[in-house]
Image 1: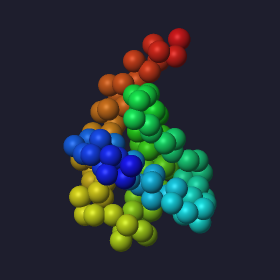
Image 2: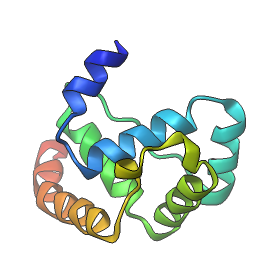
Image 3: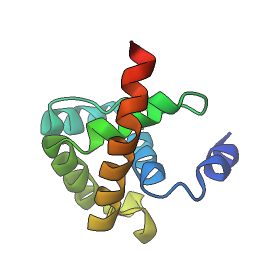
Length: 111
């Protein structure tokens, strides 16, 4: 399953990076609680078959308090991540663009 996950997420850029952060956060209850304390909420986990789960994951991730918590998490647990998995300012801009693009579709599917 791990190889399948890596393959299916390859090339997905910033959403893949958020996914990897979530996998790390959820790898232990201690990390989960630390992140929850920093962000005051948990990022919903994406899944392979629902595009709206990716939208929700990205939209929560870019909220200022959550974004700050992700950055803090990646700093504190930097050994968990390859250099290319650290979110950059450009990645955050791409995530915002993804959310802006998908938001109308999300609204329509929820009506």
